[in-house]
Length: 168
Image (tube, rainbow, N blue to C red; front, side, top):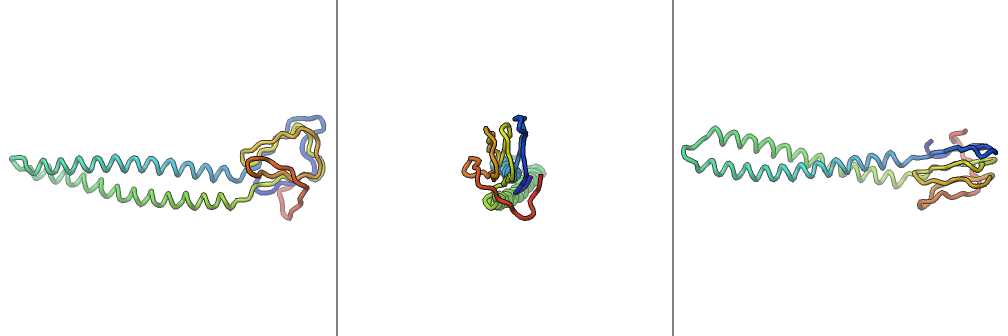
C-alpha cells in the first residue's frame, strides 16, 4: 500500500498471525543505493583509465625517440589514447548526472510522508505491522488507532479517517 490504509478490523480474535506491510520509501532507497554503487564503479573505472592514459603517454614518448622512427605505432597509440580520453569525458558527465539524480531522489525521499494504517474498530493481537521497514507486533487488542512510523518506531495515535484512502 502507499500512504494510507483504512480498515474496520484487522486480524482475528483468535490471535491468528496477520502481516500488514506499508512501504513508500524502500524503492527510492533502493534506487539511491544502485546509483551510488554505479557511481563508485564508474569512478573506479575513471581512475583505471587515468592510469592507462598515463602509460600510453609514456609509451608515445618512448616510441618517438626510438630508431627507426615508427609512425604507425605512434598513430595506433595516439588513437587508443584519444578513445580512452573521449570515453573518460563521457564517463565524467554520466557520473555527474548520476550524482544529480541521487540528490533528487534523496530530496524526494525526505518529502515522502510515512504511510499510515488506520483501524476503525479492532486490531487484534497477532497482527504484525511493518511501516518502511520498522516492525510492531500487536500484543493486545486495540480500537480506533492509527499507526505511523516516527523516528524508527511505530506509534499508535488516535484514529484518523481521511478522504480517498485504500480501504480494506
